[in-house]
Amino acid sequence: MAMTLLEISQLKKSFTAPDGAEHVVVDIKEFSLTEKEQVALQGESGCGKTTFLHLIAGILKPDSGTIKIAGQEMSAMREAARDRLRATTTGYIFQVFNLLQGYTCLENVLLGMSFGPGTDRLFAEALLQRVGLGHRLHHYPRQLSTGQQQRVAVARALANRPKLVLADEPTGNLDHKNATESLQLIRQTCLENGAALLLVSHDREVLAQFENVREFAAVNQAAQEEGRL
Amino acid sequence: MTLGLIVWKSLRQHALSTIVTALSIALAGGLLMSVWAVKEQSQATFTGVNEGFDAVLGARGSKLQLVLNSIFHLESSPGNLAWQDYQDIAHNPGVELAVPIAVGDNYHGYRLVGTTLDYFTQAEYALGQKFAVQAGGALFDPARREALVGDFVARKMGMKVGDTFHPFHGLIFDEKNQHAETYVVTGILRPSNTPADRVIWIPLEGIQKMAGHDPKAATEISAVLVKLKAGSAMAGFRMDMVYNKQGSRLTFAWPIGRVVADLFDKIGWFDKVLALISYLVAVVATASILASIYNSMNERRREIAILRALGARRATLFAAILLESASISALGMMAGFLVYAAILSVVAQIMRAQTGVVIDPFKFSPIMLWAPMGLIALGMLAGVVPAVKAYRTAVAENLAPLS
Image 1 (cartoon, rainbow over the protein chains, first blue to last red):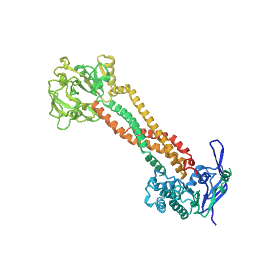
Image 2: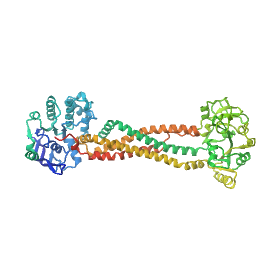
Image 3: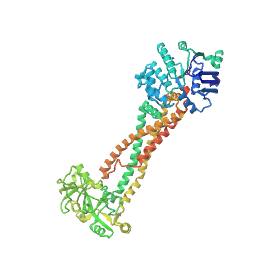
């Protein structure tokens, strides 16, 4: 039986609007993910999907509730420990890739490793090779096509052998062909590296490729409230 | 590796502002070290120059003028003294060596100094070092119109053994005042790196009896260079008492080093002004580090957020900014040594040409350690404000727009 990797309970996050009103963005009673599971969360823009991923990654601190990754309760951790956990346990693929423009493909991957267990040049090169960029190791992001940049982001997310990969609209900036290829690559490389995948998207074609698709509004109480309003 | 890579990439990405800021640090560091080293070395060198003598006896007047005239061959002579004054002091039991000199003529601005052979055969201009003649030359014959030329003059005027020349009257060159006498160069002195290199040495009588000079001065001299017997400090005190306090006709400048040190005391304010300017330049240069990094912080927010999202700790990014500002300072200081070497080389050349005194641009001085350390520390301090900004950068707000 697969072990639970991500366990969320009574998670709440709100922001203060410019008018001073508290705006609850995430209100999730329960959510979980097992090891190596691949789940797609479906939701429209602005429904709190990115905030949810930021909370899981430890980039944002919840107002209340618990997030357990690989048995470690994150919300009780100090920030530095959350940073460490993020670097070692979680890989993050952003919609806009967020590659460091002054760094080569290889350096982007190595830098991600350096905050985690340490740099492993051979593994970094192997990952870039795996995503089809073995011949572009020393190219800068600006010298790559959008699809290639996305693949660097995938390699970087997997560089620390994370247990969980978070993907935020990873194909949102790609054309149809590249989006399909990229999604297959993300799913395949996660499988190969034993990482679970939690992907959020509003793109029906992307969602159609997942066996396990959950409606974010069904998970997020705040989105339901928003919908009712 | 991580910090180094982040800093290196940032310096490269902001190469222009890095170079400009580092150059301002180079200028500040170079100036600071130069001002300090010139002050330190010139003071040490000038107060150490005595051509092997302890004191100078001359006409009544300023001790400093007497020393400048007879040791450094600068300034005019305060007046003459009688040959008997020379004999009196030469026979003083506390005196080891007394050498008379006479001035009053020049050759294209370089002084002719009349003296006796004792100056070359007896005096030691530095411990164990006597003036020596370069190969192929010889000391002048005191009974003939012969000259020994200082190394610097020989090189500047292209003079060599066997050449002849006509002296000019006075200490300042005026082509209308040429003497009729012809002098023959018998030797070139080996470089001593002292004011003696800038002088043409001729027999004492040559100056005394040069055509056109006052016949009454034919037995007078300009000064007596005095070396006291070892351990005869008391003799110096006694002569100071006899000549300066009890007498009113002559001046006894002793010890030479203290007389020169008085000069540096008098112009000490000038050093302070130069040092103050250097400190101000250092502060402005440091402020430029702060401004250049701080101004780039807005464009760096996204990069900082990405690094944080990858797992970088706030402290890591804080340290990276501090290291970056310290690196700019360190790069600047490397170039600062070039600025220092350039300034010191020019100053050394000017000083040598004007006084004959040589300073070494590459001589170690403690300023070469504490100026770089101070400026690097200041640079790091300048990085604190932008580092705090990096530390406080909100990650989620500066990543991609929320979906």
